[in-house]
Structures are given as structure tokens and as C-alpha cells.
Length: 133
Ligand SMILES: [Zn+2]
Image: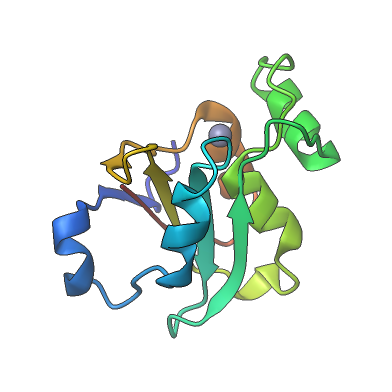
């Protein structure tokens, strides 16, 4: 793992402490669909949202396939939230931080540490900070 990147686990209770809280509208979107329970948000240095990604059990994406292949997990073809956010980000050169959250069907925040595939994809971007629930 790249030592420049800081991985921190953010508990929901502490979310107000951070200067980049996730947009509140994400919450209702996430809990309303059990198959879309992961959200990734990319911010620039000033905390502006550059893109929002969600996981999808029906969609595949070439970027997902590329990084899945690179880490030897080519069977994981469905789109992860982090990859979706990276693919949607129009100015990835300004990307500074990614926040990943997982919400279960009861609305509770669960562990959302990026998997090997997503760590590989994040490492290919300028993102310096990874935070997750
Ligand atoms: Zn992943």
C-alpha cells in the first residue's frame, strides 16, 4: 500500500467532526435500495464534491475490469462505488479525498474499507486520503 495515503475509519457519530461530511441526500438514496448500499464521494482539496459513485450489482465497467484483472480478482466484474466515482469524475487531477460509506438495510453504518481492486484503482489517481465508515 502506498504510504502517502492515509486510511482512516470514520464512525458515524464522529461525522460532524470532519470538514467533508457526506451530502445528506445520499442517506435516503442508500437506505432505500438494499442493492445500492455503498457510496463513494470524491472531494477536492477544498472539500468540494467532484463526483459521487454507487456500487451496482447489475452494471459492469471497463475500469472495474481493468483493476480487477490487475489484482487477480477478474471474477469481481460488478461496479464498486469507488470505481464508479472515479469513472464519473471529470477532473480527476483535482481529486484529493475519497469517502466510502456502507449502509445496511436498517440504516446502520457498516465497515466500508476499499477492497484490493478499489485500492488499486485509487492508487492510480491523485487521491491522498481515503476515509470510510
Ligand atoms: Zn471495491
